Length: 237
Image (cartoon, rainbow, N blue to C red; front, top):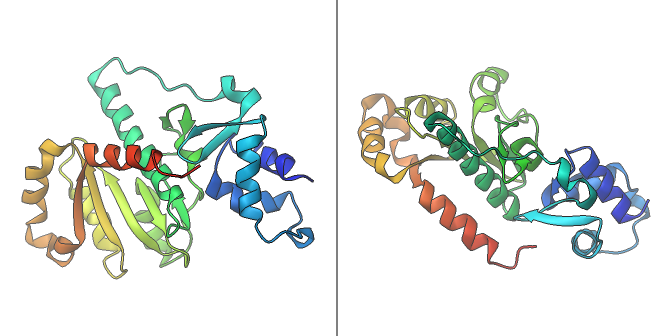
């Protein structure tokens, strides 16, 4: 099977979309790696998605099947405040997944909210993992990690960064999830509108969260957007 045909198969099984990081991993389900003579298969995959008109770039290192573009999930225009909140939440998760997929130190990405739509792509199609790998006790994974907004995993499949998007809640649920993972060298990040920083500071100052107080960062929506847009302008394909 050619590289292009293998890439096409990955996309067909991933809602017609695939980030490069997923292609690097999944293309070998359809192409025999033992028969590859070249030493730069990743470069070949990159070249194929850029030059083969069967594929169209639709995000930060994200490609889709050109003849399936009209079948992609359409992001609805929010009409109510609740819908705007949900849309904004999904946008932040989508940006975090694409940023994570673009970084060499991030091996895998995960989200619990697989059906949310970001720029006509479901979050599930952007994540390279559909389930959390068994990096710790099953109870912690089942009751905490699985319900996290976005996780970046390192090459050993331990969570390097965990993100919780908090648009209007009091941050406590996020802090409780972080507390469950305090024994790992994981960076915890709360993403929220900039105007909620005072609320964040007040909640994290409570004694119950003292063990992780110095390990949690607050990032505003604007900071995530700036990072995403800056990454788009770099030499990522």
